[in-house]
Image (cartoon, rainbow, N blue to C red; front, side):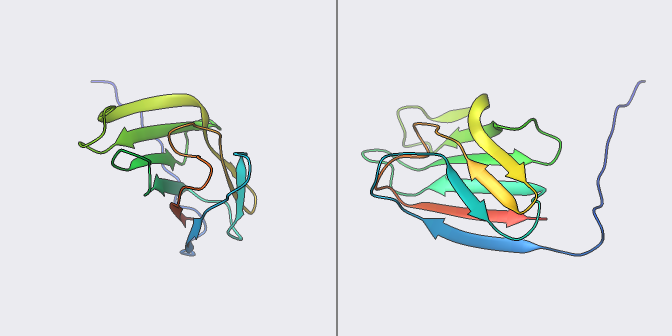
Length: 116
């Protein structure tokens, strides 16, 4: 049996940040400065017009702009998919929310959590 595994225990200091975001201007990539490089990020659109919520999660080890995208059961797009563009990209001091058209929508409320 072959096993491939990787693990990152960080530096032993727990880091956690959360917040919300809404922008009434033109949709653009959103840069969040949480003060550390996240190892896990989840962003949820809680006001998707006419549908239930949409979320994108990014885990340490995933490629930049990737994400695990889910739609609630009440959505016409219910289910999940791995996206390979327009997702989450981490940086030294936070992360960027890409222009995924289900998540990053003008005048819709986003809530996010980042864990380092």
